[in-house]
Amino acid sequence: MTSSPNRQKPVDFIKDNGVTYPSIWDPSQAAVAALHGFPTSVVPATLILDKQHRVAAVYLAEVTDTQLEPVIERLLAEPAESDAA
Image 1 (tube, one colour):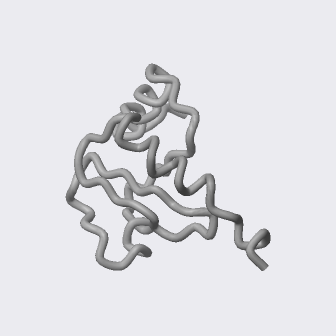
Image 2 (cartoon, helix red, strand yellow; image 1 turned 90 degrees about the vertical axis):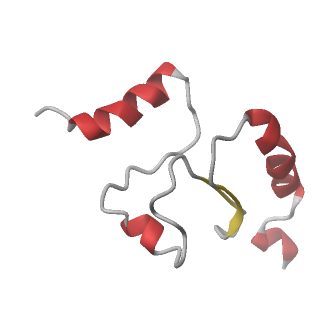
C-alpha cells in the first residue's frame, strides 16, 4: 500500500527536519473543526496546548523556535491539573 502524495509531504517534512513533537494528519479537518472557530484555510498554523489540552497559543503564520520558546517555557512552568489540586 502506498501513501497518499498529500500525506507524504508532511511525513517527509517531519523526517527531514527531525521533528520530534506530535503532529496531526487531519485531511478531513475534523480535529480542527473541533476547535470551533479556528480558521481551516490558514497554512501553516501552529497551536500550542497547555497541560489540560486547552489552546494556549495560536500562530497563523510561519513560526520559529525562538518565538515558541517563551510560550513553551511558561507552559512547562505551570503546574499540571493534578499538581494544582
